[in-house]
Length: 280
Image (cartoon, rainbow, N blue to C red; front, side, top):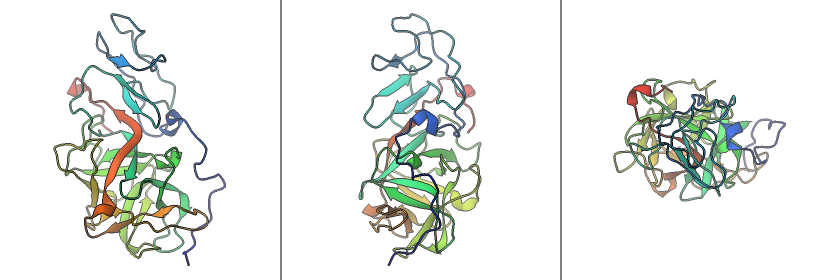
């Protein structure tokens, strides 16, 4: 018998399709873009906001983004869509960068890391973290942040072995684990914890990958700094009120259940001038 969760929120759990610009309103991505004399802006017929007009020799001043909108300097990778690049070069092609907002896919079970305002009915009673099959659920976006505000400057490629925080965009809570048993598998509970992106030292995860940087095309592991478990899914499914969602938990051993890959999201481009980087 599945252990019950707390009272579900009144609104459905992110089933409606929502634009990515609306979802990143709380991600501190409001700095306007800048362009070189010949900005590299490519895409389809519709050009991203802030890019120069097609055929222009020089770029105009940056368009002022509306409140909460993602700046045009971002490389936008959307499910079923193309990518926009509004910059001339990038320091580490394909790298995940600090400040980026993305979804993470568990490669073994093909579900995305997810959270919502539904609390565990056992263990810590904190906000639950699950895995969902839907690729378009707005509650599956996470923001990449450093262990401290100064250790992960916005647009800087994340290095293999670097400690990061994963902050849930919609609720402002950090991916977290601690010595409570998970409700279905009795592994270590993984929750979302804190307020407005500030939690505690159990929010830190080491990115484990084989190269110099965390590449978007690579499967990586996340090892918890405080308890040394790996972020994992082994397939257990919840019942009401989140029927079909998978349990996310921590496991002590590295195995095929704890590989994750960056999927849909907004990836901030490294600045051409390091002095102009904004701190996250």
